[in-house]
Amino acid sequence: MTPHNLHFQPNNGNLESYKLYTRPTAHKLYGSVYLKTTSLKHKKNVQQLLEILALNGLLTTWEMAKIKFAGDLSRTKTKEKEYRRLLVGRTDRGKPYSGILDMGLITKDGKSYKRYPGDKYRLTLHGILYCLDVLNLTENQIDIMASKYAAILPKVFGKWGYLKSVIGKDVYKIQILSKGLLLNNLDIALRVNPPLYELMSYLSVKYKKNFEYIEESDLANQISLWFYTNLLYRATKTGTKVLHSNVERLQKILLGDKDLQNWYFTFFEESKLYYKKRLDNILLMDMILNQ
Image 1 (tube, rainbow, N blue to C red):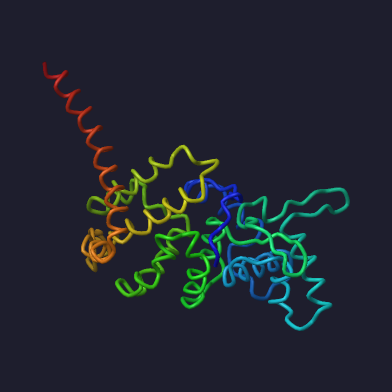
Image 2: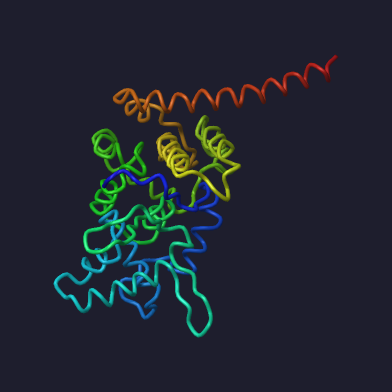
């Protein structure tokens, strides 16, 4: 996939926005489970369109339709019109219906001049998460999507082959995030040893102001930091179900990639400073109260 055009910025918010708005709204509009055979034609068509983009990357509506009906010109033309309506919306009996572009699962990204001038489309990061959440993708399909969207999520999908060589099937735990599980709630704090909860909480604080809108590169950074921090999450086989930190697994990845190491350590140092300032305030209060 060619690097995305920076002139086209998806209208997405941070991960909290995905959890509280995009995911539940998309579930309502397009389905919360994979609709392989169903009478719900609109939802099924949207899921098919999303799956095509997930597995093929940047496409025009004509190219999407050709994938669905290769060799059948008439059906391809009909399907292209349908995909265009799904993307931009339609008006039925005077009532407007919004398209997938408005939902923020897909974005325009450049132009194609192969057949005639036409917009090119791809998944947004929210769209990628929705596909991981709902479309019942196989591991092989997730691998394909990672290759198509390596430029959009470079710290994870751009390192996919390397990550698989180090942690194997644990790469697919990114699907945990697609379910809206940010691992920053107090229940995690009570069940897991530091620093998983503390780092996830700081990650939420770091991007707290971006609920309504976030630059795509910043959202990619937030998702990537969640992915690597989540590697600390490891369940024991004890009956208490207490979770322990798995620093060694994260350390192994970082030691093998200097760029990743420097990038993640910057976040780690930020979080240390964040908590140090709060501890200093508590110690100051303690000193005042005990004067």
